[in-house]
Image (cartoon, rainbow, N blue to C red):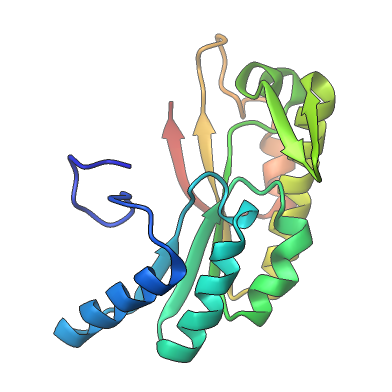
Length: 178
């Protein structure tokens, strides 16, 4: 949560679904908006409130473009559900597709009730990210990735992955240094 910035894409607070719907209704009463986005806390797909919010938003404000961000771990499991809820755009943040680099970034993942560490953790995460982006692209009008090149280990986290990126034919929304 960032209380110092007031611009799109920066979280200023965490809202319960009903509070978010009230806020959106208040904002749209003051003037038109076209897009509503969900990001977090943590991975949006790990929170049941994300789905509850999109269900309520479809009733209250069906014409708004609905987008969300995720780290992609749960995207293969929920891509179809998001499509059913009318989510128009999903952005997956990916830090590495090379497991050797990803091990330096992620110390663990919690997946399906179990904690995974090391190579096993990053292999699950990377597979789910790649599968999730592919599945989302089949379900949504827009799906894309944000790539974060982390140079801490002396090379870019995507330096050896041009082939994987080209093969996936992703819509890359942002490539940012970290």
